[in-house]
Length: 140
Image (cartoon, rainbow, N blue to C red; front, side):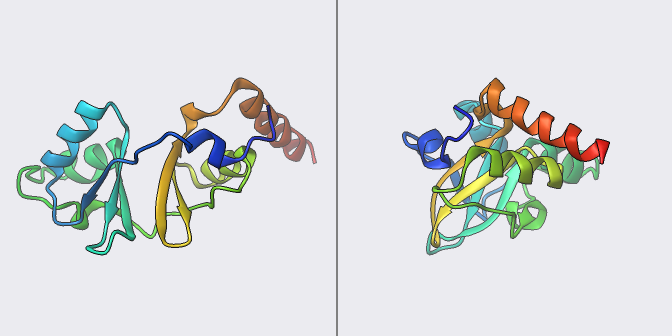
């Protein structure tokens, strides 16, 4: 179970996307309705432009007193987020998210968006392996 590929985790996903011109309010409503914590922000040709998360809504919009009805995702999204390919292993994604301090990671096959993983998508065994690795490096 600790050697799963990301493609196995996302195989039935239909990633939630919006264009960079969509408003934060639209994104938050969609996140609520779809019960997701992140929106993949796309270019007009469907390529990944950025990532917008609940943390972005709080830290970049609410905390700065921006108007969610008029602020576009392009103005507050994370530009060029880290990504992985579907053949990468789950532990690789967990390492990236742990090292980078984020909870969502887009999965791309070339330039095509194929999914997104979040910390909650991984099994206890996969998270335990990361904890074990982290503990090992802390001892050294």
